[in-house]
Image 1: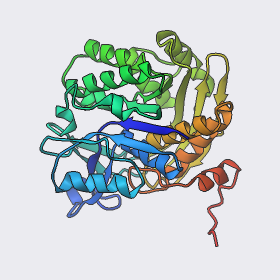
Image 2 (image 1 turned 135 degrees about the vertical axis):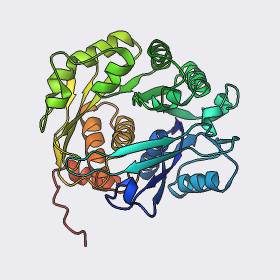
Image 3 (image 1 turned 60 degrees about the horizontal axis):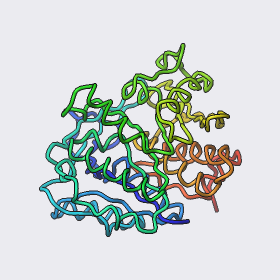
Length: 348
């Protein structure tokens, strides 16, 4: 496989141990992660050559984030340096009827102060087959949005496949109003071949929503057919898109979710098997693990969208059992689950 490039922010994640609330914490567990870095880790773990591009501060905390990427086999030589700090987010892990909570501390992070021209995208994309970004990056700052648009323009001109996970984050879009946000996301997404997003992403960014569905009342089983209208509307809005994918999460509680996905290629809607994840260890990064699995699946099975989708869903199902932002499941483990073996028996 040729190389994949992802672009975005890697952050320091601080979380109280176990299921403690912030107010109970005397210490915090340290993890490094972020939407696009998590995708890069998944791909490296599957044996796909991948570079992660970001902007890091030249200090010890930036070096720790860099070390985490290198440890996982992700290429880091295209990273640029500058700024004073790494972005931080605090995570309080929920359980049962208490949802998880995130507090961001990302203002004035190194990547939030990035500007057009700081990254040589021609050099970054040499020998590259696929470029991935998420809706989190343009939400960070106007400069980050400008650089993201700069990247997709160069990638498109080179014939590189471009994917996005729309990832709406209400707490991040602070530099513009809703109309400007929609324009920013529309401009960048218009260059994409592969578009992933759930029902909230499509509605919040573009006003597109499933017909006759209230996602909060779906409970254990989410009906895939209800999202066909979303996929059709997304393809009409973004003619370059070859595939639109939606994750289907049924939230019974913070500890028990159903999990599936659909893929629409303009003619056929493929639906994955549905998994019941009854004891969630860590759901943060679940969508990123889906995207990493999807990119791998589409590269490995270019003529088999069903198999690619099934791989993505099984991969992200396993991520819910792994502490931290990134999915550390192997191809063999994903394929074992795809085959129907969810026993969790000890491998001896």
